[in-house]
Image (cartoon, rainbow, N blue to C red):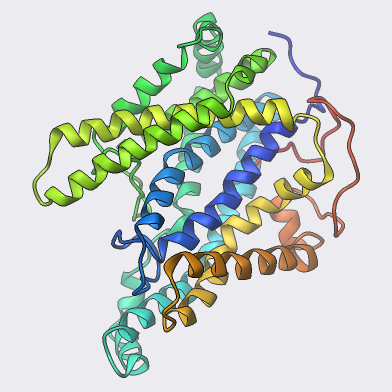
Length: 404
């Protein structure tokens, strides 16, 4: 393996990571209008099955692809900075934002959620909310919110710290390269994902509701994290992923549609468990996941490897946008609960409001300030960055890209 120069920047993967985080805003804009119970802070009385399909499709590949990118850049950090530098970086870029996000967002989101619940059931929601607080239920309701993925990532990074040399030997072996080269090699990874999905409630990736994720959740995301780690160790073969593209993404969407049908069959049979539908969900979810993430990676490597000010800005802002978007979304979703608009219109309206507000706050306040230094590794001037040199080995910023 030929090591990349110390300044190597992987623009395509930067763009992928940023896109997946921004897609999380669209996902959560839809969850308020889903027929699925308990998937968002608010449950609007107007729901849509299209929202269900969109959620299941995006859930199939978004976080898996993010964890592939996280594993890739974790290996990069480990190689460039050693175990000590890796640990300090992860504490600063994962643990501190997690604690800040909990303190800044949970009170507002929880109170808005409880108020919305009473608003739909009681003529005096404020009085009921005050009673709920007086009962001490606020502290008993603590949960990691959407920040649970940071806990999983921190645990995987903590596991990789002592296992770094062993992971280099294992994931750096010739077997990984052979799987990348072979047309059907990705099926091995899909098989591993299916094995981790079978213990899940519905055969899709579970979302932890506690501060200690279940072993099955850690195992599922560990597959993607380790694949990303291996990709970095075999980075000279990233071109092998270019053979995947729009066809793989389309095939992945069809698999996700099949998985959605199997999920519906399972939910219709509750409380009984339908084993064939459960196994079918795990199978089609695993296939759809790997087809889509490899297809998107191939498209990014072909189209976005040169970098641009727009994609660099998207990457820089992605961490802020995803971590702190829920209060902005809820702020517009809560008053829209009284409107009888179609769910699809409300979903779009939430995005039209939230995304500009998030980017305005990022550019005015976050990017040039202390929070930008925490999230991006350093303070940055407002506006789009200057055009960088083209190619995967263009000069990087002071902080290795994708460190989030």
